[in-house]
Amino acid sequence: MLIGLDFDNTIVRYDRLFHRLAVERGLIPASLVATKQAVRDYLRATNREDDWTELQGIAYGPRITDAEPWPGVMEFLGLCWDAGVQVAVVSHKTRHPYRGEKHDLHAAAHNFLESHGFYDLGLSRDRVFLELTLAAKLARIGSLRCSAFVDDLPEVLGESAFPREVRKVLFDPANAHADHAGFARTVSWRDCADQLLVERRACA
Ligand SMILES: [Mg+2]
Image: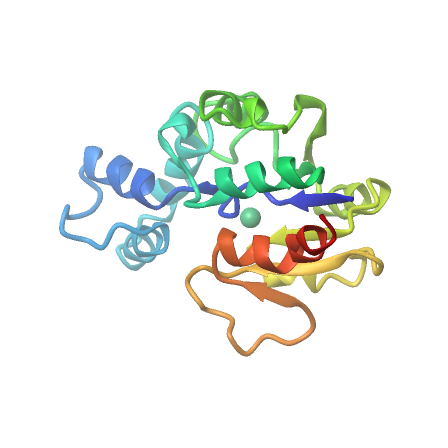
């Protein structure tokens, strides 16, 4: 059994990092709520779209190690390890940011996984696939024969090219897609383990 995981906003939580970066640069008031979405909405509302794009290049690049593993994801990996379930990461990620300095975003993603100990938890480096296009990501999920794939974006799971035999799980910690039909939904990594690993535990 192999479970596939998306990377950005599924394994990695950027909320506090975006807030910190924006405050450091004087782009937002420190009192703004510390979520990625609040920072994005504020910068868009103040006509600072370019600053938002540039912030993303920094957050997904050189400062990514200051982002956090989503609460519970390390424990989820531990439970997979205990259950003998393999894990792969499949992400759609350009090599460089759209704007600003040409940081290597793929190297940065590996840095995050390494510095937070993911490679000590049963995830192997050669099971991390950073694909340049969404089509390549979907093809990879299919060729790996994932039994399930966890992603924070309903539009990814809803793609017509999404491999049909793979169980789709929407990671929705903000409970923003409660009415979504067509795939399973999970609000936490604990809940995700209960959904995906329960049969394995029952067999143990
Ligand atoms: Mg994502």
